[in-house]
Amino acid sequence: MIAIVKGSVEHAPAMHAIEAEAFAAAWSEISIKYEIMREDSICIVAIEENGEVVGHAYMRQILQEGHISNLAVKKSHRQRGIGSMLITDLIKSALEREMTGLTLEVRVSNTAAISLYEKHEFKSEGLRKNYYISPTEDGIVMWKYFD
Image (cartoon, rainbow, N blue to C red; front, side, top):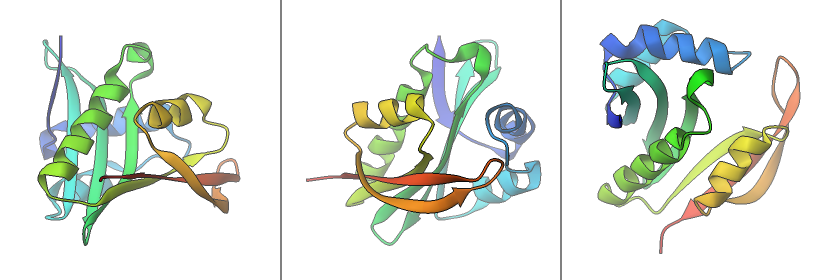
């Protein structure tokens, strides 16, 4: 069984390993720790019963909006609904903080992530040319607004 819990600096090494596996330009362990400790940041992790971190997500609150900066699931644990659990928890946190909506950027080629966000009613609202590096690629700007 997977539990979604608040991320802590003790989770940072495992989170970094997942980042390195998932992204060409992974966040460093120091950057992850910094994000976890920020007052305006929400960091959550997906943990197996045995304590293994198998996914994580970060979101910063900017005024009354949330910006999801990263969401990653360990390759061996993908296609099990963990990404959806993480998104659901971020949405719940945003609503608890009375945010008006959530935004994120996603690589145009990341069809699995785009599908996940669309499942949670995020809509494409723009394109950031050459937003990503390694390789250079456009980023789709997606939003989910709360009524």
